[in-house]
Image (cartoon, rainbow, N blue to C red; front, side, top):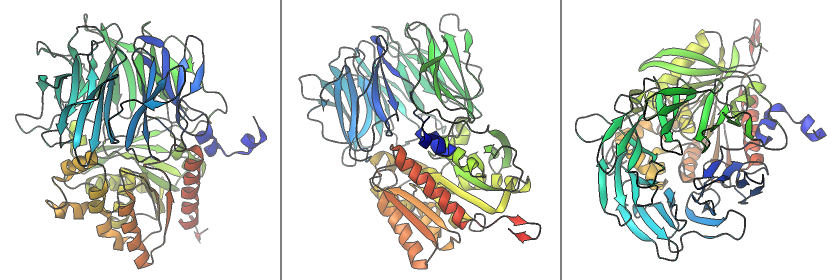
Length: 605
């Protein structure tokens, strides 16, 4: 290890240490794989020929690249080319073995992506596009021919999957106007409908469906589908041709997803429950469920290989991520510095206004409270924090803070009712749960009530600003990363798919339900904010656009409120390691400068 690396603080090493994603492999050329790595200091796509061991960097852009796919024959790598993280662009491609990039679908104008499916013939693709003007459109592109539009709707939709023989396309859509719960339609590639599956029809239940993939067998019309009919995500097999539905009825308590084994005889089951996950193999003939052994923690991705082995990306709060295989050992080991570990997470359950709230707690080894405590709030909002490795919380722990992460109502992994509770009183519901956990943290002696930091990114940044205004006496410092700050302006400036989500969450547009947007907007409460505020924002962000953040900052300036703003030239976060380290350093420094000193027996010290 170099002297520079030896002198580098542990928290910085966690960001700089090379890491890799779970490799995606070509269906008909399984030795050809594609993965993402930060080995050069920027997250980019890499090709890996398993037969020879050769690895090469595919993309090299100033702000990084993570969206890519392999054609099933392994001949081409497709990647999405946007401008400085604005998520608005076109698909490009290059040969797997290297060469010049070219436009993947000449004739399609730039857009936000709405899914991609690549055919096994090597020359057919279905490309999803989303724009403010057109809503969602789906296009069939064949090599040497102009792309043909086969679907259009104002509401959000997306490409699901192509059947193995390339004749059928599964589409997720929200034509019914509920962006949180998709229905399914299967089309031929001329756009004619073959079958429909819609759990939003009939009754009052808000039930969603998702495409998990067609069976990997020619002529097989079975589609693996995720459903919510028993209050959580589970898989079923839908024969598109006959209409028959085979309910797997797995007796697992958490959310369940699945993908096909390559021979079509079984399913790889991923079970997520109470912030941890596990894998199983389900045999479609015997209906036997057999555990696939993985360490305790979180499997953030898994795939079954043609030889029957399973490769998976695993980590825990204490151990950094690694791509492992059930056949033994680490599959893909990045060269260079190793990431230091961190401390294990502790589970806490707190009674809240909507039911038991699950929180994950980390604190410096051997430390006793009351400690300065960071409430690090996850984004989404339909997401959840888990027992997985995260460099950001670990950095706070290294600096002497306890870190509390709350899976508030709206989070996934705790059943449909918990996720769907986030309606109309948006933001305020989540903050009720965060307040309940904050009360526990103080009462238990973990947290120093005078040194509480509220922070988060994206939706977590939104909740940070909203919390500082609606709970002004609860927090000592606020650090909001790429937040929603002015909900009305954010709605008008954000990408169309997020407009649809906001209409679902709040029950309409700002013009239709102005009182709900006002009640849920941090700008409404900005004059009640009492504590120092730090905001960071990407100037090209289409999700939490810069204008609405500027509106909020101007109100702070008028009041003379203590605040700092950091703007950077990227989108909804940065894929550049140096930039991310700079941001974390600024956040740590802001908290250190503005938190009060710890109180000792004779007063502050």
